[in-house]
Amino acid sequence: ETGVTQSPTHLIKTRGQQVTLRCSSQSGHNTVSWYQQALGQGPQFIFQYYREEENGRGNFPPRFSGLQFPNYSSELNVNALELDDSALYLCASSLPVLDYNEQFFGPGTRLTVL
Amino acid sequence: AQSVSQHNHHVILSEAASLELGCNYSYGGTVNLFWYVQYPGQHLQLLLKYFSGDPLVKGIKGFEAEFIKSKFSFNLRKPSVQWSDTAEYFCAVGASSGDKLTFGTGTRLAVRP
Image (cartoon, rainbow over the protein chains, first blue to last red):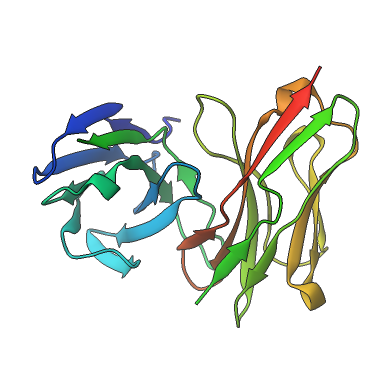
């Protein structure tokens, strides 16, 4: 069973640029959630995708957008990068069954915005 | 809106000491409760979870947590810590009807050998 994988591991961008982060969900999982973890903070929910549709969004501006593909992998896109976007971006996959919503996290992509 | 509060930001213990990390949450409905651990250089891993039933939950590596509904608390405990327990610990809450998790700010635990 393959776990959640994310790419790239690290990324450095400059303010105003755009970035795309990628996530492959754990085998059999159809739901992907994205989180932002700033330094010294807990992860904050960005949004979730279920069967290729956005299924909930946290308090993040529209320049944070995403996609989910038929194989349930996902992308997180951030436009017009700001310095405060520097963080660890975590992807988590799950297979919601009734009320069971355990999420499995990937290693994250560390984004630095200069 | 959900919120999670972890009162201990940094904890330093000697090996064999007992551990208790506090977690309080705020949410109006039925919740699922989680403790995740992040070892240095590794990704978030689930320690234990509570969905329903026995409020005393046992997880991996000798950890346990007790759900006290009247106090909106889900404190993590371990009777005797080891150096390998050095990590950051996150409490999280999820609504039973969806997957979104709300995390606390984390507690950084350092165990001295």
